[in-house]
Length: 403
Image (cartoon, rainbow, N blue to C red; front, top):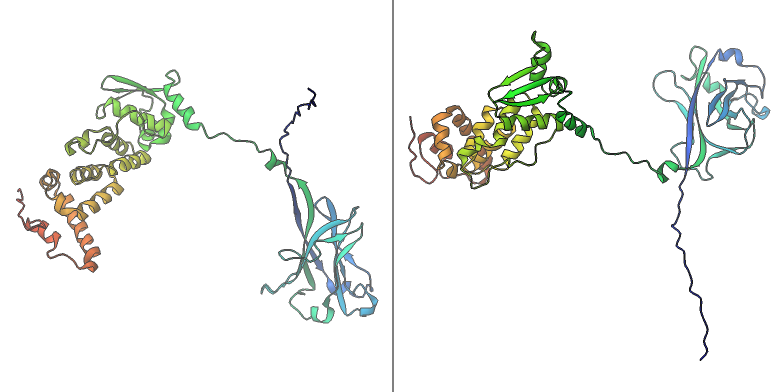
């Protein structure tokens, strides 16, 4: 038996490569003031006065002004203006703009520009040193001398040159990755460094080490305590109105700018509303208010807002009012107004009437505002605001008001 042995083909796959060529202009401008225009006249056709050289895109340039024109056939009827390549160069491609300034302040400048418009043949090409771009008949001389472009025997030209350059964009082909900010991690680790601390808090016998500068940067209350009082050299502070777990959570926020993750911050929906004030999040709200930690207060408001219900809204409203949680308070008032019949039958509503009459008045105002919003929809048979004020509810039953 015969056959043909076919060798195996080893195919080596090479990763594709790419490149990116970017063509753009390198722009530069020059202001050329011609003082004594009348003295420059009569120097002869084809003779010019020149600006100082200026550099754009690695080349030197100059503005040439011909008071008697560049061509003899025009019989000195026009002035001529050109931009000239004043250094060595071959096939230099560029965009140009010439502007004769209106000195009256009316903004009616005379402008010839390649910029911001499509060019059929592309940028202008200057072949060699001395090549020029411009206008032989830039302006009729008699008109120029009667215009607002010539004032106090002075002309002002603004010139812009955009040299076309092409280059491989290596910054995009090989980007350098910048890591995410880790400043929070570093401050968090600082909290664990007992040796560098300069203040100790005694909270119910539990010790917490911290740093005065960090605390002062985060809280105006701590700043006043440590740096604006006469006894700012204290090394230990006794805290009597905050629980250790709450103080620990507050320090965690001050250093990490986040809430702790391993603690149940919000009570379950089945939790009795009377326990809300005993949750860590409620006590953190109180601590945030005491130490003017605005962001911590807002975080606590956000968490408590998620647990608003018919049974809990009045207790959360009391917390919000007590600790200046304005946004949370507004949400509670709105919720209670929208769900007033059910809220009026809750134990929390009775507590509100007995202990917080000012909040009850605010709730009345919220109800009135809610009724105005709903009035376009047909209204109710009887105002819930009126029923609340006289002791009734929206179903007609009486609610005993305690005095």
